[in-house]
Image (cartoon, rainbow, N blue to C red; front, side, top):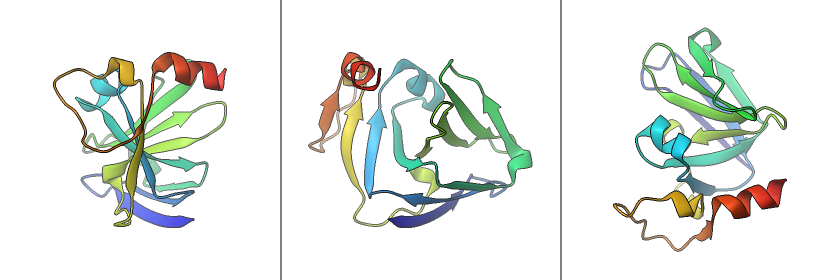
Length: 135
């Protein structure tokens, strides 16, 4: 388990978490691409997230199963939160991650556009494979 800490761009919101691993994942789904202007690079924080500056956190109900948080002061994306399990995925750039952090998997790989490609060797999971695994 690795303890990490970070903040939004303006510093109004800080996030502390305990990561179950040093793995980083990438999501290429349409919602993440619209939210980020590109793929979401995120770390799984499970449920161990401590947020300070909550008065600056705005939550957008992005689907029936998840919500996304951002800083109302600077607009930084803060988290993707699964409602049912209370699991958080936090954009990797929020934290000062350990140097041994590795990109290990990409989800919704079938929605990745052709105009970019990561060089990392990762597990690639389609949207259908992901939905099938968790339903």
